[in-house]
Structure formats: C-alpha cells, structure tokens
Length: 318
Image (tube, rainbow, N blue to C red; front, side, top):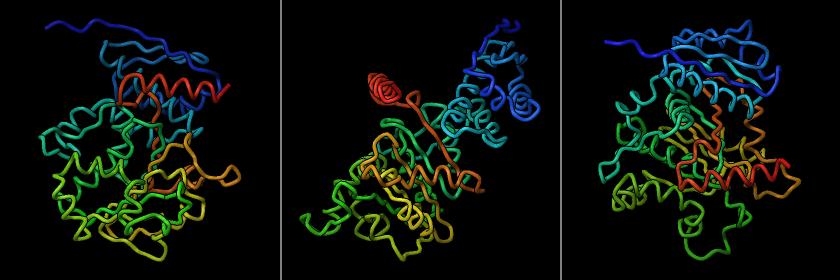
C-alpha cells in the first residue's frame, strides 16, 4: 500500500481583518480545522498555506470556502459553526447515505448535493428553529419539505403546516376566487411541487383533507399555538418585523420552525424592513436557533442559473 502524494494549496483572503475573524481567537478555528482534517496550516498575513495529502487538503479548501461564505454574510464566526462545517465536509456524504431526508415514490432519495445544503440539513436536524437565506435554486424550500416529510413518516410529528405571506395580494385574499385553499394555492406552488415529488399525490390530497398537511396564509396564524408539527414559512423575506415575530412565537411543544427566503427578491414597500433580514441579525446568538446562508455555489438547477444569479449580484454591487 503506497502513501498518498503530498500536495499544497494557498488560500488568498480578502484582507487582514477577514483573516483575524477566520483564524479565530488565538487561532482556535485554524487549530480545529487542522486537527480534524489532519493537514498542516501556516497562516501568514492574509494567506493560508495548506499542506498534506491530496484529499484532506481539498477538504480543507472546501471548509475555508464555507467559512468565508458565512463570514461574508454574517460578519462573524462561532466555534459551533466551524465544527459544523468541518463535520459536513468530512462526513456529509456518509451521513446522508445513511440518513436520507425522504424517499420519493420513484425510490430516489432526497439528499444534499452541496456542502451548504449539508449544513442546512444538519441545522434543521439539530435545532428547533432554522432560518435559511439563499438565492433561487439552492433547495431551501425543497429540503425543508424533505425534512418535514421524513419526520412525519418516522412519527416524530403529527402535522406539516405550510405558510407563506401573500404579499403580492396585499395579504387581502378575499377578492380572489375560490375557498381559502384555492386562494393561497398559487403562492405555495413550490412547496406543493416538492410534496408531490416525495409523496403520492393521492396521499398529499388525503393528508390535506384530514389536516395532516395544512396550508395557511401568514395573516391567519395570529393567536395560534402549533404543537407536534413542522411549520415551514416560505418567502420569509416578504414578512414585516411584526409578522416575523408573530410567526416565530406560534411554535408549541415538539415543533420545528423552518423559514426560507431570498433577500434579493423582497416585494415589500421600500420603506418597510424585511422581517427575515431583521431576524437574521436580531436572533443570531440564541441557542437551538440556526442561521444558514446559501449562495450561488449551492444552486442545483440548470448550470446557467448560477451564472445568472452571479451576474445580477455583481450588477447590484456596482
């Protein structure tokens, strides 16, 4: 048996300030990555030299890419976030092979396809509230539904509640034709599409008839306490601050809340601050509440979607 050839990689950081945050207090984060992956790390100014066998070095590069993404979005890192990123990069594929989120009627498994999606799934498993922000195509809603379906099948919860702010209709649904389900249905189409991929459509309809799957406009959630459920709020960027506070406080015993949103697609009036943006800043230090940031590297739609998202982001930055 021959030893793997040694290799080296240099990671160039944007600034010395980024390096200080990435390295951690007294280089604690660097030591965590080094010890977990078995690589040699040399930090000089705003560069990191990684030496070791090819596979651990490649993993270290992925870890630092993910950590830099978190830093870019939230402006800080915690030891828990470093541990989670390392664990997902190191063991993500083995974990998801053993614990798929859901199995579709076709027999195909729902599993993460990027490191960011792996962090998202781990966050949903380990926390009671998960807020996930990312552009279109990163699997935010799809994986949230997969988590809910998996927990329902295992008997860990009794209901799935799907919620969305109908901001395009001004949260006034009365003028739309049909009953409540018919009125809100267009706004929840992405969640229904995911449900129908993971369960037989007849089962979905039966569960809706018996309230095992419930759909609700955000405006109808006031005053409720929802227990033994996974509650998914889609398009969370279109909530106001009072609406987000109201929604997050609906959680009862043995429930999980998952909020997804794309903060580049806010339909609120310009003078109204997004409740999701506010929550990502206000709630960052609460235990059992996870904040997950996905970016264009986590897009799993057509390869062109990554390039389209990147082009729009670059234009907005300029």
